Length: 389
Image (cartoon, rainbow, N blue to C red):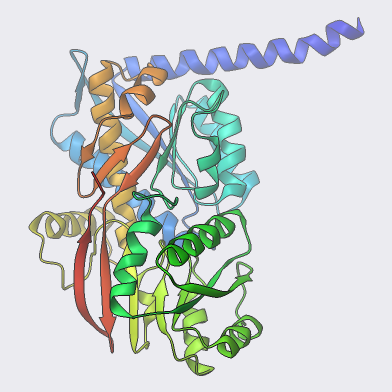
């Protein structure tokens, strides 16, 4: 009897997963592809979550306006199912489970590892595909049980890593011999610290210090005082919302260095800086942009979202491109419900949207971007930074 009681929950769990998988197929058979958007659109991650969600909505709106997505001789419309996680892991898991019950099998989630990892544990056993920008998920790519995780964007070291592509742009602007790095005290921050240290030291720049800060902090004077004492030529900081305060306090403390944002930092972070450089991780979306393709996207995004662009709007392109990338993968796979086939078809097929993407065998997506150099508040240069072939 005890054994039966132990087995019964497992049986019900397996039955529930099977039912959820059937529901996902049924929904798609009804002609609707449901895509889950699980991002914090309020709270500490809203600067990422809002544009991410708007990018997905625009991609869906455009494909529906063209008559839908044609796959395997059938035509499907796309519905974005959005939930605000509020950067709360418990909220994210609850919303993911609700979406599963509603037939969602494609998830775009989440910006922070505290959400991304448990959500992946919740949705992958139900056969879902998960597209995530979260850096900490990189270590899971291609591992057993996580074959259907795809990483939208790369900060890894190596010739095609965003960090390795970005650092040479900055070093053209300042002939730095020394540098300091300031990153959040989380798993992604650790990855940033190591990749930026490697990239800088690989170019002969000595990293004098690596300082950490907590999300939500407002006083960075202890860390910045240490940095000031070391007198670096270059100060890298990122990736979170606190960077604007870090650079402002660095100026107040008299740190006479060139300021540079890491991947993930917007132009707003350098407001008031004499000289500042940041990587528009996708494409620059300011008034100085001249690319007609990007300008058309900017107009469409404003119309779709019903609001003016912000310095963080460029993040929307990541999810916009990746949803279109998945549409192309569905067409190659000839299915909108065979998630393993779709995840496989997304790999090893270069995709050119607003950004150039290369997705490797493990599911890591590398992307081109643009470097922005600002002097005394004016944009001096916007340069494409292309992937190595």
